[in-house]
Image 1 (cartoon, rainbow, N blue to C red):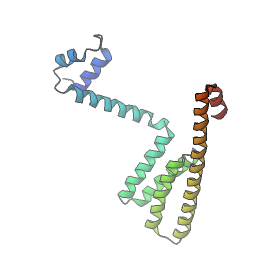
Image 2: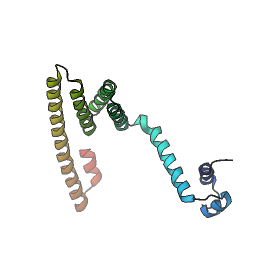
Image 3: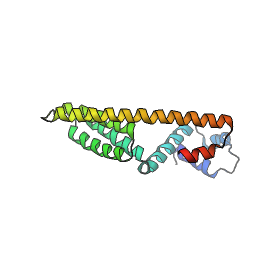
Length: 169
């Protein structure tokens, strides 16, 4: 016999009865329809998320970062650093500044773990890089807020917004 959520999926997929969930619920003798529907919804979202994961660079960097954090917490520092280097390269390549900031902050913690003769120099470089990224983010936010203000003004005045978008995006 099929699992209830598979029956629900089949019903939703092949429904020719104008979406009569109550009718299906009676036929299938499902005890908790709402939790079943919620479970199916979460399964579908999780599946879609994993399907699109490889196509989204932001997700790739986030996953690499999360893996590095897990390895760090498990005290697998060399493996964590290896992941962070991958994440840093990707975040750098695509200018994902906030993710790059997270990667560098965790990398900074690892400097204190390894404490070799280059620790002071490495820490200094990381701090400089973090400060530079902070500044880039500030500048990006400043210009984004100016863009938003212009967009609102143009929208309120009734000027052609599409022309504005073509000019500034």
